[in-house]
Image (tube, rainbow, N blue to C red; front, side):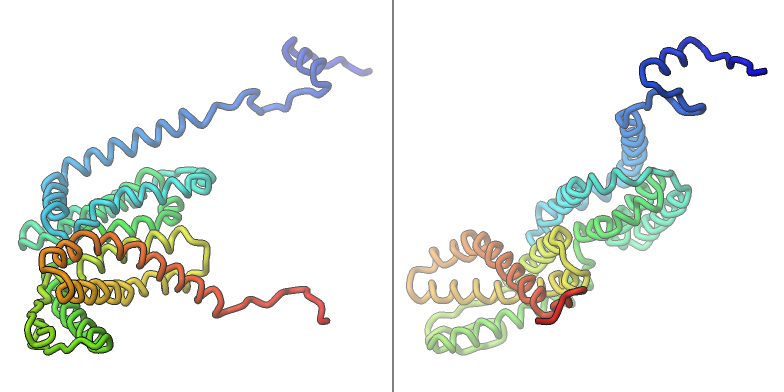
Length: 318
């Protein structure tokens, strides 16, 4: 005896319209992504607001250094560059479902410990690096370890917004200044200019002294070019060893560009007046060096792509 199964009227209507019965346990309508995205953004905003409140004094000090110290003025662009890198990866990041992870609380507590260490021992750099660590902990707490791992290079990139510690600054500033002076003397002698060097002072044609001050060491150019190279390496599609080469090559590129600027300034000192040379050095030359550095990085990327040629799999011999 065959019994007729009882179905609700809604199921019968769906069967007639589609020819198929609805699955059991399957939602007939799926909520949009908007509500979920709004929820995660609200959580992120709340945690970030707490971090900003705790580190407000540190953030204010960073802003003052970005404004007053030209060597690290590029740091104020790093957060915006990081947001841009997240934006270009948005489609890939959407494929990962955010899963909050309480390990983020531990990372934030470590950041707070580093901040208190900096406050107690008057080590300002520890407070500033603790700010970046707190941001990393926030990402882990709100979005989970999987998404944080996908953002790892962008999170590491945020450390570039922090000025170098004073000891590191003093350690590299002197050698950069000496390298700039030596490179300028060598290049000017190749161009036929008689140069006598006394420390970081160059005497051109035995009559015109030009001093390479600490501000002319190229540290400002170095910090800017490292940021540019890091963004360029992240955006370009190439193997990891090529990306690493691009970032490391920003150091000699910065030194070479600074030497080029010094040589051009010295030649202007010989040809035109001092005011024009100073204007060129501080204004025009700084803008010209950025496109020159980018062109060098593109050339390095092109050379690296030609160093190793991957074999064609499945090809036939002629």
